[in-house]
Length: 358
Ligand code: 57M
Image (cartoon, rainbow, N blue to C red; front, side, top):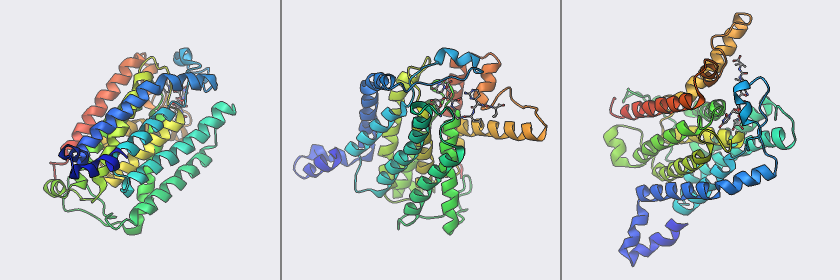
């Protein structure tokens, strides 16, 4: 709204020209969402406490017993900060901006449904995995179907390292992209098991994708870097900026020892949105490197469950997802978290370097 209100004034006062720039608005989107989540975070935590939205810790998770009763569903503050900031700073005539917000809200609604069933209705297991997956599929299919009908959007796939390989998946792009959104949503959810473990790499990934969306949306940069141009997607950089700010603001309270957890309302929404931004930027495959921490965590579960079934009860890790393995080895929680953050930064830098390795 600020963009729509103030940029037209540039015709009279040249200073307002600054609102034209995606970079400027992305930085202010970041600062706005950061301020909202830090300023309103304490109120939200008190509100969640008053509604008894508190995490129950299973008895077998001995090293987490001190966390019993920590308020959860803090992802709501990320959502509020993100939506307000994007509405203020983005060009609201841009369809990709709206689709990104709708993906966040859609996946967030599925997570909210699960949290509500678990925490408010006290049904310990929440909604069934099948219902959760069905909800995620509905949101993902709707978003990707809307996306491929955009005239400027191509169903070609960019393959990292190979600048001339762009297979056109045609209609098969829909199931492929839907898989990315759902997998990314669940991977962030699995990772969200230690204080700041999911939101740290999420902020790093969103920052990294802000560069990819900016580059894809700028014809000259896209041509120079030999990446698929997506006219209009540069505006999603504002969404990435708002995500980084909202995530950092949430981390303020979720940092070890956490005052609040994000809940599925946060983890499913953030993961789905990250996947969608990778699809928008036409960097679908590189997401596996940018979000490498989420991939390792998910692979550890797949390997653990697969090996457990095949070997008749043996395990590869002491416990999956991977962060539990390190905890059970006696590594302090804060050390595991910071090491995962370091890995995440390294992998994001490697992903950015692929822009020149083609
Ligand atoms: C949700 N939820 C956290 C919090 C957070 C198939 C199987 C691997 C599934 C997996 C699972 O259920 N994962 C999804 C993980 C939970 O956090 C809540 O959930 C939200 C995210 N959805 O926002 O509201 C607990 O995580 C801890 N936590 C923090 N700080 C945070 O900032 O410390 C979360 C956020 C919280 C808190 O303790 O209560 C979770 O871990 O449950 N299941 C598992 O991860 C289980 N693993 C397992 O069973 N492994 C088996 C097999 C099946 C692979 C094995 O290795 O043999 C673990 N879950 C728990 N304890 N709770 C086992 C140990």
